[in-house]
Amino acid sequence: MILVTGALGQIGVDLVERLERMHGPENVIATDLRARQPKVGLNGRFDHLDVTDRDELDRILDAKKITTVYHLAGILSAKGEEKPDLCWRVNINGLKSVLSAAQKRGLKVFWPSSIAVFGHNTPRDDTPQSAVTDPSTMYGITKVMGELLCRYYAERYSVDIRSIRFPGIISYNAPPGGGTTDFAVDMFFQALESGTYECFVAPKTRLPMMYMDDAVKSVIDLMAAKSKHITVRTSYNVTAFSFSAEELVAVIRKYVSEFECTYRPDFRQEIADTWPRTIDDSTARRDWNWKPEFDLHAMARDMLENVSRAVGTPSPTSSVSRHK
Ligand SMILES: NC(=O)c1ccc[n+]([C@@H]2O[C@H](COP(=O)([O-])OP(=O)(O)OC[C@H]3O[C@@H](n4cnc5c(N)ncnc54)[C@H](O)[C@@H]3O)[C@@H](O)[C@H]2O)c1
Image (cartoon, rainbow, N blue to C red):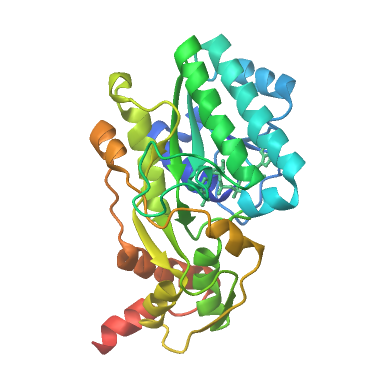
């Protein structure tokens, strides 16, 4: 039986859908602090769970006979700077509870880290797997601590914990939850809804990103890999492509020619400036055959088709193909 925490979030909604298809909806229990929203996905089993409440966590693990946990509940980078105490409580105490519960029950665990573990002294291009981690945000600090906790529980107690350092994730089913890469999602919605967007990072800001289909694929592939192939018990670098804000605008304008983007960098610019521009994910490729399927253009086409359906506008990708 599978438990997903933070299941109503950007990644949770898509990951739960995939897990339900793979294992059957009766074998997946989606949980979140928030109540289920009728508009956003998740049709299977759902329970309330606050991951900072250890008793509630233990109760649900035992009552539902859980064997695998996908621990997605967390506070993201921009929200974490606004609420650093909450960020620490949820990201560290929540993970520590999941790991210690996993140790007692022999559970297998997936937990996402982030490119936010990197910082000012990290090489920003082709950032290696073993690059120095010196984050300047509370979010990044909780992710570094989380990675070390994961390795500790794996080495000291043989907990089968697997982790990925996600880049910015682009998707359309559930809105992003307050991260520094949210502009890449917002831009698609605003391009189709209003035709204009005010971007909170500068045009040349380049960051590593990934389409949700590939993010979900990476989790499934990593969890399916044989334990003997997992050489990294902190967290694996993975990436799909990198682009600057102005490059994304140019790709969207191929389909939505009237789209206008202006730039007003805010505090998230400083965060982005400490993160890698591109990532070396060769260790994940070697250990568990990681390979993304979507490049920037395939992602943009698919996003425009799906966002246009979501907001009720004609698909700009079909009109471009018709005119060709
Ligand atoms: N989305 C990205 O671009 C990205 C990139 C790198 C890493 N990650 C990591 O992936 C994980 C999921 O990210 P996401 O984008 O889905 O985030 P999100 O903010 O969209 O969703 C997080 C979910 O956790 C829930 N939550 C918050 N506090 C909780 C608590 N105390 N108990 C239970 N649930 C709680 C929220 O209600 C929300 O539904 C996080 O650990 C995040 O750091 C995400």
